[in-house]
Length: 350
Ligand code: NAD
Ligand code: TYD
Image (cartoon, rainbow, N blue to C red; front, side, top):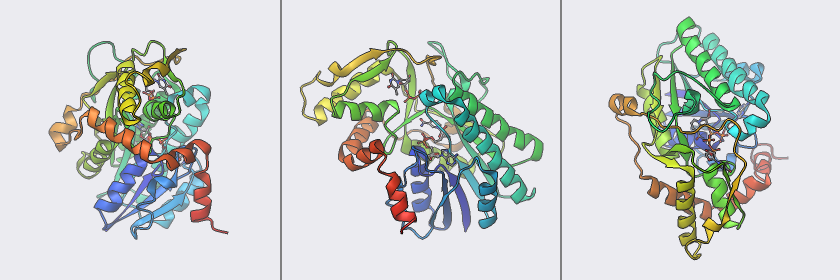
């Protein structure tokens, strides 16, 4: 019997982690803490919300009092921390929100864990989920390893880098039993349609233009979200305390090549003539400070914990397209903001 707090469980990756833990470990109680920002949607968890081992708590991690109250309410054995502001373009518009949630929010959780666990850290875990973007940008060759120096370039990655440093500092200073993972770009179901793949699926479906930043020659390493959730499960249970694990897909794509592949999959699924969707591609002004290339060396997690991605990218992309095309209601709700009324109906009935 264990009680595990998952923060950001109503978001894209968090909802997959909550689903995996609630169903795979019926003996655990899973407390999902989420503020429900524009990116948090309880409709992502409809299939598990009725399970007896699942609890939802609407909490803002920036509010230290709310966080402390939650830690007093539950005897937590572990924390998997995913709550964050996560979109680079939004961080360029309003960096402060990123500092508040990603840095201050993380420190509030660290303080609560340290104080509540009162230095009795046996069998406790504070697992911080982070990104490969903390390492900055690669040239044409090379990979990020766990030893790569931090060199964040965007306000988003700077805030995540800062939170990683605080998590490590609490281990070094107070012996808090932490573990960190830095993962590459995720794709799959329930991703908010502001990130590249769901945005472009939605735009192609609606015959809207596809805004490719710069020349589209930036490279990302893509991982299917359920493979990330499986890696988180391995690291939570078997990761060495104080250690960092890089997680990646061994799957690099130049944006424009990925977009052309997506266009061709969409043409086939929508019974459109091959080449129809590609005509929607529009080259637009580049993102300021755009990182050229991310690529992860995931050999440590593979060798130590036996984890590797389970899906070929072409298969994962096809599954993802199928999911978005058959979940029209979900897409309509998140793009219209209608999902906010779901929380009211479900959790605050009149
Ligand atoms: P997301 O934006 O889809 O979800 C974030 C969740 O956090 C939302 O449910 C939101 O409501 C919640 N949240 C935001 N601010 C909060 C606050 N102040 N208090 C409580 N909850 C709050 O993000 P995601 O893509 O699922 O990413 C989850 C984590 O994984 C993040 O920490 C991100 O940095 C990391 N990550 C993401 C990717 C990726 O490709 N998406 C890759 C590597 C790492
Ligand atoms: P994104 O999904 O925002 O993830 P990240 O910036 O965290 O890697 O973007 C993935 C890549 O796609 C990135 O190089 C920026 C590019 N991009 C576009 O060209 N157009 C878009 O509309 C978006 C959202 C992203």
